[in-house]
Amino acid sequence: MSIRELEKTAADVRMGIIKALHNAGSGHPGGSLSAADLVTALYFHEMNINPKDPAMKGRDKCVFSKGHAGPAQLSAMGIAGYFDMEDFITNLRKIGSKFQGHPNMKIPGIEMSTGSLGQGFSAAVGMAIANKIDHDPGRVYAVLGDGELQEGLIWEAAMSASHYGLDNLVAIVDHNGLQIDGRNDDVMTVMPIGSKFESFGWNVIEIDGHDMEQILDAFAKARQCSGKPTVIVAETVKGKGVSFMEDQAGWHGKAPNDEQTKQALDELEAAKAALQ
Image (cartoon, rainbow, N blue to C red):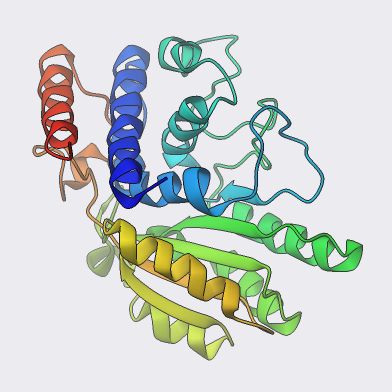
């Protein structure tokens, strides 16, 4: 896909998130919307995957360690063809549905069930180690929240990844500056993110997480890095694309009502149309 096509697809991913959370009546729009450009770049440009063969040997793997933002991953996967998009939009968070509020391995293509912050990243490190042992060419991508970096488990995993020289591992930090209780800096600062990872032996790339060209360039640079894991620190806006949700901690875990959903979809449709 071209840059423009990826940007349009990211708008579709955002609309899928809004529709699904509205139908569910609960969920996490803020962090899902902030990650939409990153996940679009992963599923429609960067990763070696086959939606018709989710267990393909040698595939790349994506682990959403910030599991509450799973709707972003599911929306992208639905558009990519892993499952019927309308099934996701209609049945997210419904009793008996495979589309739970967080990533669920019962869905082909979901590599790790996540939700307890920090654990997905550790699993991704384990997958990258396994690929090294098995001489598997697949790469592993772990999407992290910035508030998630407050978990000690994150830094144990980061230390392990560096120790084992996991240049087949890329961590992507969705740095929107907010978490459920407010601003990260007020709850417990995670800054400076890049310097912390660098001190743990990581290759650090810092970008605008809503600039598709910068995102693709960062993934290309990560592929060129040898002997150490890469972290992409992506500066983002919580609730990106929906004016009344942007940079608002209150939209961390609250679904939009009918009127809010209409406004959100109208804004996203207009943004997509402007890309024509």
